Length: 311
Image (cartoon, rainbow, N blue to C red; front, side):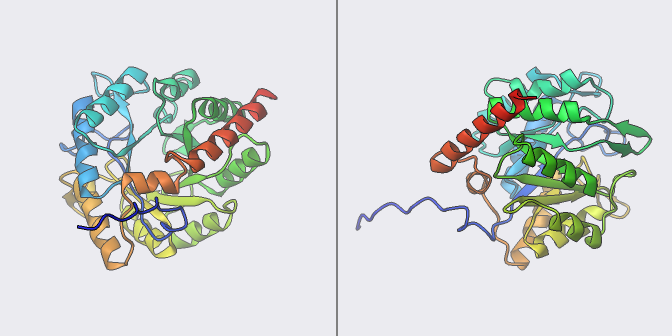
């Protein structure tokens, strides 16, 4: 057997066509009464994350619940979910929510997951306020600057969640102020009552607003989920599925698991010649991998911290 030189690590450019599937397993508001397969305990959420990884997901977006099943931002619960995932030998990227249930937790509680030890690789960054169904989801400029600063100090990649076009413009302003730095990872959340509709026209408009070089993904609420995911695949973007956004496999048929929804996207991606990114490939694409890209990212985050300190 001949021994050759080790293959070089793939660059971000080498992975341009790879599809990153994210799965939001739980969310803040779905209940087991709506779908008994919804994971709510730390053990259930971790098990769902591992199953989603096996089905093709590179990222799991995690919310946690208290003992009564209500949304919480308890950093100890987040840390336990991650520890349980890692104990299974699973390499999936854990993306922790700072959303706090659209008004059910304080700003300081929402900031807490960013500071756990070690910090999360990715955390959500809801880039503006909006009516959210019958609630109001407040993300003030002051809160966003504070969150950006903490993420910069702890080396956390913001998943810049945009529920309508104005949120993309908010992100661009934060980029201009030096509070958000590349590489950028955007998540378009479509179909929320009070936000942008889940249409291809709206998706194209928001993609056209992005800063140069940004990577983006889309998720949509309810029946819009699958259609928007397929549109994103066709457009060269990335896709999120999961029970946070949709509890059904098709009209009138509840999904049996988050992994079932991931597996469907994986099958469609194969038909569309979009090979799936592994977690490590997604890390490279998003600037999370070790090496020169990580060093560059560290310098950029240091710049963002300095910019935040000026406010």
